[in-house]
Length: 319
Image (cartoon, rainbow, N blue to C red; front, side, top):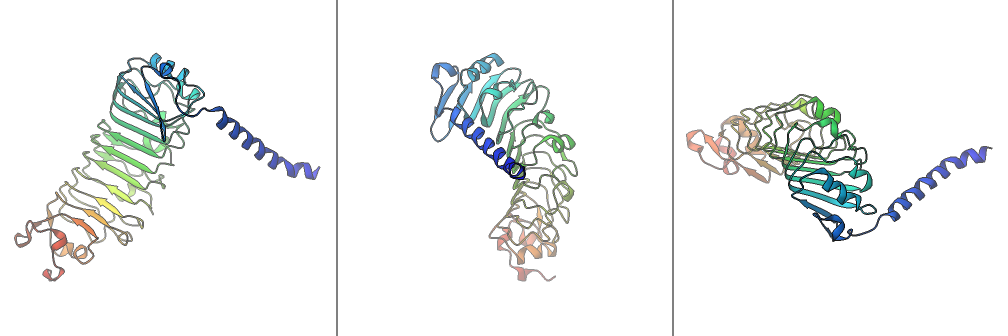
């Protein structure tokens, strides 16, 4: 009896392996027949990519996916289209790894949370208009989502709904021209796997350290083209892997010495151009510890106006 009990875990593992192999073998490589995916087009090279343009109703997509069973799409691109939503059922019959929506209008992203999209790795929304807005609860089943890119949309505030429903496996988050005015404290605190965070061409007027995990192993932070006027003294503290910080085209005058406490050892890129930086004793710490790529110009004092910060000599300061 004891030997039988010991064998149970082994048998379970073997069954799982057989199931996984059978699933892989059941999928065909390449593309379905071109007539089966019309009006979409399928290309198979390094990846199998389905490109759908000018889709006007959900039935069209349903028919394409129905005729594509036994295949898997690495990428699905939908462009220049207008319809109600992506039917969740289509993802139950065809696996999809990356989903791109561009220049498309929908009422909502999915009709219901898509339980069969748990393998989705990348979601890219570019100039995609959702009449009901982005409903974060629809993201809950996307448990392996690593990359979220949202371009040219309207997301005024990022807060609790995002934190609750978006996968904590997320590694890259990019918002571009989303009109985002605020990120609530704690919004990203559980997203410890994030390695790149970018909010560019938004309308952020302030940032706080408690938005992010602490410590935080992020490598790239971009907050270019916002409305930032001040940088909190601890904003980038305790981020030991941080390599790139973009703060271009804001209204920042001072970078406090404590801003990068415990985080400056690996900084290679610090982009400050487009800010009215005051080059006085408060900047001495940066002049003494210039990263390999430092951009930005002094706005004052008069003697240094227009001078590249990277070219300012630390001996100039009598601090």
